[in-house]
Image 1 (cartoon, rainbow, N blue to C red):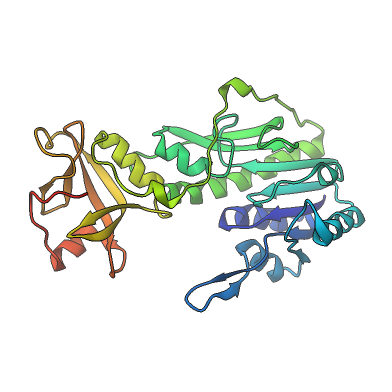
Image 2: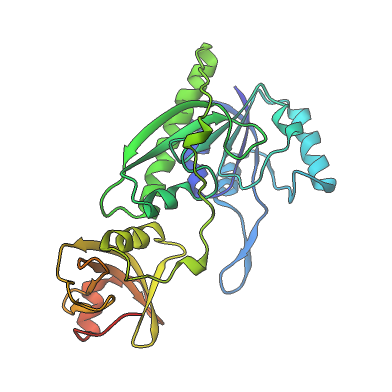
Length: 312
């Protein structure tokens, strides 16, 4: 099929790769503009652009799709290409109606079991909220935010200690499979549409750095979910000896924190910390200020901590 692909980050790469390798005619790729990264602020292309260029697929990077010369040029290009399908995966821009009306279908791959977790951060919020299951949904795009009719979905359990970044990678691969099944249904004329029940919806906004500090007065499960949900970005943080400590991974520990002030290190040998419900979390991967990310056991071998200190 003649397809225009719109996507930007790593999450979208498996979907584009699957389309190419399955023999679909990806006529063009639309992605976000290159952005400066690193200490030298060198302009760096998005992952989707890098893959597209490997296959000599034309790449377009409009700053806006809503107004200005960039938007007019993008609309003109899309009308000239006249794709049968536009596939959107984590593009990062809302498509105006003039673009949605160009192809036969405009299909989005969304990393949640809609109608739950509409928005930019569905993977992280599913972990933050302690969900046991999530998945990927393909849907028809409309002008609302992730409100279009659902097409196909597949679910997957969320591991007890699984981080948002680990779940991200699994869902990106799952999404590619769901997308190919959706395209097969389009070709076979068996595509079924299901209206979303808005009463079951919830919004998953982008994460912000003001969410990072760990509140040890919460239950151990909530603290554990917080650490998992913010890993690897923007990352949960606390303070050790007056310096910032990033926490990437943790485990739940039943008991051990009764009658202890929240945030107290109750076991310095494995970095177990008391939480508000009398249970604890054990830090298993951390990054001290000025140091590199490492396994907690390795860190403690070089910099042992004192039992009874209180993290803030």
